[in-house]
Length: 273
DNA sequence: ACCCAGGAAATTC
DNA sequence: GAATTTCATGGG
Image (cartoon, rainbow, N blue to C red):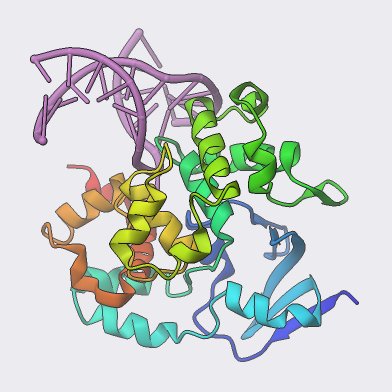
Protein backbone atom coordinates (compact mmCIF):
# COMPACT_ATOMS: atom_id res chain seq x y z
CA UNK A 1 0.00 0.00 0.00
CA UNK A 2 2.88 2.35 0.79
CA UNK A 3 4.41 4.03 -2.22
CA UNK A 4 5.77 7.30 -3.46
CA UNK A 5 3.30 10.15 -3.71
CA UNK A 6 4.31 12.54 -6.46
CA UNK A 7 3.20 16.14 -6.85
CA UNK A 8 4.10 17.66 -10.21
CA UNK A 9 4.70 21.25 -11.23
CA UNK A 10 5.58 22.45 -7.72
CA UNK A 11 7.03 25.94 -7.44
CA UNK A 12 8.04 28.13 -4.52
CA UNK A 13 8.97 25.16 -2.32
CA UNK A 14 12.40 24.61 -0.79
CA UNK A 15 12.29 21.74 1.69
CA UNK A 16 15.48 22.97 3.30
CA UNK A 17 14.22 26.52 3.83
CA UNK A 18 10.72 25.40 4.86
CA UNK A 19 11.62 22.56 7.22
CA UNK A 20 14.68 24.20 8.75
CA UNK A 21 13.47 27.76 9.36
CA UNK A 22 12.26 27.41 12.94
CA UNK A 23 8.56 26.77 12.29
CA UNK A 24 8.77 22.99 12.93
CA UNK A 25 11.10 20.75 14.90
CA UNK A 26 10.69 17.15 13.73
CA UNK A 27 12.20 16.96 10.21
CA UNK A 28 15.76 15.66 9.79
CA UNK A 29 17.85 16.28 6.70
CA UNK A 30 19.40 13.20 5.13
CA UNK A 31 22.57 12.77 3.10
CA UNK A 32 20.72 12.85 -0.24
CA UNK A 33 19.07 16.19 0.50
CA UNK A 34 15.77 14.57 1.42
CA UNK A 35 14.04 15.02 4.77
CA UNK A 36 12.73 12.43 7.16
CA UNK A 37 9.74 13.35 9.32
CA UNK A 38 6.60 12.28 11.12
CA UNK A 39 3.26 14.02 10.60
CA UNK A 40 0.02 12.83 12.20
CA UNK A 41 1.69 9.57 13.14
CA UNK A 42 2.84 8.91 9.56
CA UNK A 43 6.58 8.61 8.94
CA UNK A 44 7.78 9.61 5.46
CA UNK A 45 10.70 11.03 3.57
CA UNK A 46 10.21 14.13 1.43
CA UNK A 47 12.40 14.96 -1.55
CA UNK A 48 12.37 17.51 -4.37
CA UNK A 49 13.31 16.39 -7.88
CA UNK A 50 13.32 19.55 -9.97
CA UNK A 51 9.67 20.66 -9.87
CA UNK A 52 8.40 17.39 -8.43
CA UNK A 53 7.71 16.87 -4.73
CA UNK A 54 8.08 13.21 -3.75
CA UNK A 55 6.64 11.90 -0.49
CA UNK A 56 8.08 8.44 0.01
CA UNK A 57 6.26 6.06 2.34
CA UNK A 58 2.87 7.75 2.05
CA UNK A 59 -0.45 6.28 0.94
CA UNK A 60 -2.36 7.50 -2.09
CA UNK A 61 -5.33 8.03 0.22
CA UNK A 62 -3.29 10.72 2.01
CA UNK A 63 -2.58 12.80 -1.11
CA UNK A 64 -4.82 15.61 0.11
CA UNK A 65 -3.26 15.48 3.57
CA UNK A 66 0.27 16.05 2.24
CA UNK A 67 -0.81 18.71 -0.25
CA UNK A 68 -2.47 20.43 2.66
CA UNK A 69 0.57 20.04 4.93
CA UNK A 70 2.85 21.77 2.44
CA UNK A 71 0.14 24.34 1.62
CA UNK A 72 0.32 23.53 -2.09
CA UNK A 73 -3.00 25.27 -2.74
CA UNK A 74 -1.64 28.76 -2.19
CA UNK A 75 0.18 30.73 -4.89
CA UNK A 76 3.23 31.86 -2.94
CA UNK A 77 4.82 33.72 -5.85
CA UNK A 78 1.76 35.96 -5.99
CA UNK A 79 1.89 36.52 -2.22
CA UNK A 80 5.62 37.22 -2.41
CA UNK A 81 5.15 39.72 -5.20
CA UNK A 82 2.49 41.54 -3.21
CA UNK A 83 4.59 41.61 -0.01
CA UNK A 84 7.71 42.72 -1.87
CA UNK A 85 5.86 45.76 -3.17
CA UNK A 86 5.24 46.97 0.38
CA UNK A 87 8.83 47.59 1.51
CA UNK A 88 12.34 47.18 0.03
CA UNK A 89 13.61 45.13 3.00
CA UNK A 90 10.55 42.92 2.64
CA UNK A 91 11.53 42.42 -0.99
CA UNK A 92 15.09 41.45 0.04
CA UNK A 93 13.75 39.01 2.65
CA UNK A 94 11.37 37.32 0.20
CA UNK A 95 14.11 37.04 -2.41
CA UNK A 96 16.53 35.48 0.10
CA UNK A 97 14.43 32.33 0.65
CA UNK A 98 11.51 32.28 -1.81
CA UNK A 99 10.91 28.58 -1.14
CA UNK A 100 9.62 29.02 2.41
CA UNK A 101 6.02 27.91 2.94
CA UNK A 102 3.91 27.94 6.08
CA UNK A 103 3.17 24.33 7.01
CA UNK A 104 -0.14 23.12 8.40
CA UNK A 105 1.19 21.32 11.43
CA UNK A 106 -0.87 19.43 13.96
CA UNK A 107 -2.29 22.05 16.34
CA UNK A 108 -1.42 20.21 19.55
CA UNK A 109 2.13 19.54 18.38
CA UNK A 110 2.59 23.22 17.52
CA UNK A 111 1.21 24.20 20.93
CA UNK A 112 3.64 22.01 22.85
CA UNK A 113 6.63 22.81 20.64
CA UNK A 114 6.21 26.55 21.00
CA UNK A 115 5.67 26.30 24.75
CA UNK A 116 9.04 24.54 24.78
CA UNK A 117 10.50 27.27 22.56
CA UNK A 118 10.25 30.03 25.16
CA UNK A 119 13.58 31.45 26.32
CA UNK A 120 15.27 28.63 24.41
CA UNK A 121 17.24 28.08 21.21
CA UNK A 122 16.23 26.06 18.17
CA UNK A 123 18.92 23.41 18.58
CA UNK A 124 17.89 22.59 22.13
CA UNK A 125 14.16 22.80 21.31
CA UNK A 126 14.69 20.06 18.71
CA UNK A 127 16.44 17.84 21.25
CA UNK A 128 13.69 18.29 23.84
CA UNK A 129 10.98 17.52 21.27
CA UNK A 130 12.86 14.39 20.15
CA UNK A 131 13.08 13.14 23.73
CA UNK A 132 9.41 13.99 24.35
CA UNK A 133 8.38 11.81 21.41
CA UNK A 134 10.76 8.96 22.28
CA UNK A 135 9.56 8.80 25.86
CA UNK A 136 5.84 9.44 25.46
CA UNK A 137 4.86 9.02 21.80
CA UNK A 138 3.44 5.87 20.26
CA UNK A 139 6.00 3.60 18.59
CA UNK A 140 5.03 3.57 14.91
CA UNK A 141 8.09 1.95 13.37
CA UNK A 142 11.67 0.95 14.01
CA UNK A 143 12.78 3.63 16.45
CA UNK A 144 10.13 6.03 15.14
CA UNK A 145 7.59 7.69 17.38
CA UNK A 146 4.45 9.74 16.86
CA UNK A 147 4.04 13.01 18.70
CA UNK A 148 2.49 12.26 22.12
CA UNK A 149 -1.25 12.70 22.58
CA UNK A 150 -2.75 15.27 24.94
CA UNK A 151 -4.25 12.46 27.03
CA UNK A 152 -0.87 10.85 27.55
CA UNK A 153 0.89 14.07 28.53
CA UNK A 154 -2.02 15.18 30.73
CA UNK A 155 -1.50 12.13 32.93
CA UNK A 156 2.15 12.94 33.69
CA UNK A 157 3.74 14.72 36.63
CA UNK A 158 6.58 17.24 36.20
CA UNK A 159 9.02 14.68 37.62
CA UNK A 160 8.01 12.16 34.99
CA UNK A 161 8.90 14.73 32.32
CA UNK A 162 12.41 15.15 33.78
CA UNK A 163 14.05 12.93 31.11
CA UNK A 164 13.20 15.42 28.36
CA UNK A 165 15.15 18.14 30.25
CA UNK A 166 12.82 21.04 29.49
CA UNK A 167 13.26 22.48 32.97
CA UNK A 168 10.69 25.00 34.15
CA UNK A 169 8.53 24.26 31.09
CA UNK A 170 7.46 20.83 32.39
CA UNK A 171 4.47 22.18 34.29
CA UNK A 172 3.51 24.33 31.27
CA UNK A 173 3.42 21.25 29.02
CA UNK A 174 1.23 19.39 31.50
CA UNK A 175 -1.16 22.31 31.93
CA UNK A 176 -1.53 22.63 28.15
CA UNK A 177 -2.15 18.90 27.75
CA UNK A 178 -4.75 18.88 30.54
CA UNK A 179 -6.67 21.81 29.09
CA UNK A 180 -6.69 20.29 25.61
CA UNK A 181 -7.59 16.82 26.91
CA UNK A 182 -10.56 18.05 28.97
CA UNK A 183 -11.83 20.48 26.32
CA UNK A 184 -11.09 23.70 28.23
CA UNK A 185 -9.04 24.63 25.18
CA UNK A 186 -10.64 23.41 21.94
CA UNK A 187 -8.05 23.89 19.21
CA UNK A 188 -10.43 23.18 16.31
CA UNK A 189 -12.91 25.70 17.66
CA UNK A 190 -10.12 28.24 18.16
CA UNK A 191 -9.23 27.83 14.49
CA UNK A 192 -12.46 29.62 13.52
CA UNK A 193 -12.57 32.25 16.28
CA UNK A 194 -11.88 35.96 15.66
CA UNK A 195 -8.16 36.53 16.14
CA UNK A 196 -8.21 38.24 19.53
CA UNK A 197 -10.60 35.65 20.96
CA UNK A 198 -8.51 32.81 19.58
CA UNK A 199 -5.39 34.26 21.16
CA UNK A 200 -7.14 34.84 24.50
CA UNK A 201 -8.40 31.27 24.56
CA UNK A 202 -4.88 29.89 24.07
CA UNK A 203 -3.55 32.22 26.74
CA UNK A 204 -5.66 30.46 29.38
CA UNK A 205 -2.81 27.96 29.39
CA UNK A 206 -0.01 28.60 31.88
CA UNK A 207 3.10 29.20 29.82
CA UNK A 208 1.28 30.61 26.79
CA UNK A 209 1.67 34.35 26.31
CA UNK A 210 1.10 36.52 23.26
CA UNK A 211 4.11 35.27 21.29
CA UNK A 212 3.53 31.54 21.82
CA UNK A 213 -0.19 31.97 21.07
CA UNK A 214 0.66 33.74 17.81
CA UNK A 215 3.00 30.89 16.82
CA UNK A 216 0.33 28.26 17.53
CA UNK A 217 -2.16 30.24 15.46
CA UNK A 218 0.24 30.60 12.54
CA UNK A 219 1.97 27.22 12.43
CA UNK A 220 -0.70 24.98 13.94
CA UNK A 221 -3.95 26.64 12.89
CA UNK A 222 -2.78 28.30 9.67
CA UNK A 223 -3.95 31.76 10.63
CA UNK A 224 -1.78 33.59 8.08
CA UNK A 225 -2.58 37.02 9.53
CA UNK A 226 -0.60 36.11 12.67
CA UNK A 227 2.72 37.91 13.16
CA UNK A 228 4.72 36.40 16.06
CA UNK A 229 7.16 38.92 17.54
CA UNK A 230 10.19 37.24 19.09
CA UNK A 231 13.52 38.86 19.91
CA UNK A 232 14.70 38.60 16.30
CA UNK A 233 11.50 40.04 14.87
CA UNK A 234 11.45 42.91 17.37
CA UNK A 235 15.00 43.82 16.37
CA UNK A 236 14.10 43.50 12.69
CA UNK A 237 11.00 45.67 12.92
CA UNK A 238 12.88 48.32 14.91
CA UNK A 239 16.05 48.43 12.82
CA UNK A 240 15.02 47.35 9.32
CA UNK A 241 11.44 48.59 9.15
CA UNK A 242 11.90 51.78 11.14
CA UNK A 243 9.58 50.60 13.90
CA UNK A 244 6.66 50.03 11.54
CA UNK A 245 3.54 48.24 12.73
CA UNK A 246 3.18 44.58 11.59
CA UNK A 247 -0.29 45.40 10.30
CA UNK A 248 1.46 46.86 7.25
CA UNK A 249 1.70 43.27 5.93
CA UNK A 250 -2.06 42.56 5.96
CA UNK A 251 -3.71 39.17 5.59
CA UNK A 252 -0.45 37.38 4.73
CA UNK A 253 1.56 38.93 7.56
CA UNK A 254 2.53 35.47 8.82
CA UNK A 255 4.27 34.63 5.57
CA UNK A 256 6.06 37.99 5.66
CA UNK A 257 7.09 37.27 9.23
CA UNK A 258 8.67 33.94 8.30
CA UNK A 259 10.60 35.44 5.37
CA UNK A 260 11.89 38.23 7.63
CA UNK A 261 12.71 35.90 10.53
CA UNK A 262 14.75 33.61 8.30
CA UNK A 263 16.45 36.55 6.62
CA UNK A 264 17.34 38.19 9.94
CA UNK A 265 18.61 34.98 11.52
CA UNK A 266 20.89 34.40 8.53
CA UNK A 267 22.21 37.96 8.54
CA UNK A 268 23.08 38.55 12.21
CA UNK A 269 25.72 41.08 11.17
CA UNK A 270 22.92 43.48 10.28
CA UNK A 271 22.07 43.77 13.97
CA UNK A 272 25.54 44.34 15.36
CA UNK A 273 26.03 48.05 15.99
C1' DA B 1 32.77 33.24 34.86
C1' DC B 2 29.25 35.51 31.93
C1' DC B 3 25.66 35.88 28.45
C1' DC B 4 22.14 34.43 25.46
C1' DA B 5 18.35 31.55 23.63
C1' DG B 6 11.64 32.08 18.50
C1' DG B 7 9.06 34.20 26.80
C1' DA B 8 6.12 34.07 30.51
C1' DA B 9 5.23 33.83 35.53
C1' DA B 10 6.28 35.62 39.89
C1' DT B 11 7.78 39.26 42.55
C1' DT B 12 8.69 43.94 43.63
C1' DC B 13 8.31 48.72 43.33
C1' DG C 1 -0.06 48.71 37.03
C1' DA C 2 4.54 48.96 35.20
C1' DA C 3 9.30 47.46 35.70
C1' DT C 4 12.44 43.80 37.20
C1' DT C 5 13.70 39.06 38.55
C1' DT C 6 13.42 34.35 38.18
C1' DC C 7 12.74 30.22 35.92
C1' DA C 8 16.18 25.02 33.86
C1' DT C 9 19.27 23.82 30.59
C1' DG C 10 22.95 23.97 27.25
C1' DG C 11 26.21 26.25 24.15
C1' DG C 12 29.37 29.97 22.88
